Amino acid sequence: MAGNGGNGGILRRLVVAIAMASAAFTPLVAAPASAAVRFAPATTLVGGSMASISCRTGQCIATGGGRSSLNRPQEPQAWTLSKGRWSVVSLPGGTTTRQTLESVSCSQPNSCVAVGWTQVGAASKGFAERLVSGVWLQTPLPSGTPQLYSVSCLSRTWCMAVGSAKQQPESNIALEWNGTTWRQITTAAVTPSEFYGVSCLSSTFCMAVGYSGASPLAEEWNGTSWTNTSPPANPPPVGGKALAAVSCTSASFCLAVGFNAGGTRGGIVMSWHGSRWAVPKVSSKLSSAVWGGVSCTSATWCLVAGDVSPANTQNFLHYPVIGRWNGTSLAALGFTRVGRESALGAVSCTRARWCAVVGSYTTRDGAQDPLIERWDGVTIDRMWAPL
Image (tube, rainbow, N blue to C red; front, top):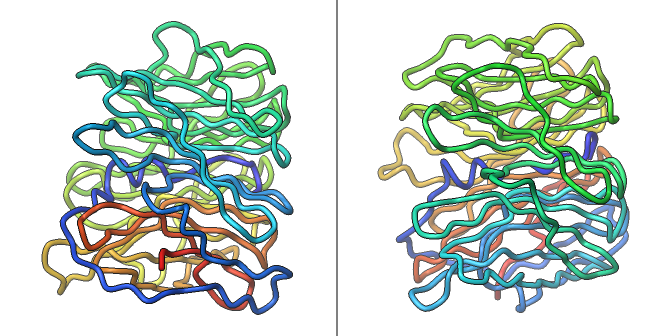
């Protein structure tokens, strides 16, 4: 994925609170049209929801949270796709009441950094994990680091992570990883503000997106400081609009997507052109779509993921949607229904003809399970669903 940013956790956290639904499933095994490997269902994957994914040739790593219960708090989970099969590992949650990995970024296979947040009682704070030789290790953060929602890594020795503090007024945060330690970087003086997504091309260019007041927020990193790029509100509905994810292929092109921050259904799409943001045309079929993930391989090709809720559907029953960017506009690529309610919140593309898209759906007992789909350049098919 260009920019190698982990996206989508904020959509699952804010928008896709899927619960209390009965589902009817069909056993699915991906039928690859142009892929080299056949994906097989893995029953060990049952439980939890995926918030982010990062793919490199030969491997994908997805992160999120496992199922919780009265006797067991939600623990962070990491799923690995290798040689056509998925496996999962749970990271101990300790004494926390809830813990999830919102974003993951892999600079190369088996070299990844994941960030998220942990909750103890009413308080929450950020945490970070690093994949080293197949083992996830927690990396200490600066004292007082708030919730982290996105990370973008260029190598084993450089990453940028972003998030926000929840105390009023909210304030965004950025952390830089040098391979050994994290350090906090001062962001542009915008209050209130929250960062939800980040995409970096080099240590001297990143774009971070989020929400400020009633308007979308986007700040550019030049290697020394952050600058507010002032994306248009265009026009803000009740509650405003927020950018949830961003993917950049050059300093003169990024695609950012998001959602209405108020109670109105609908999303937001903006393209960056080096010095300004534009609001492109979006297919009328996507008018109610809420976007949480984006991955671009060029200025003329991106895949975006989210969910829709038809106007004639009661109780806001979501189902997944995928859109494709062609350089000037966003068109609907596919709508899929899994169970009674489901959503996609993150996407990672290794090339224009191969992308993995993840999210979650509701089981018969009202719990969440992972939803994983793949674009092979021709069709969208299911990479995994429980039997």
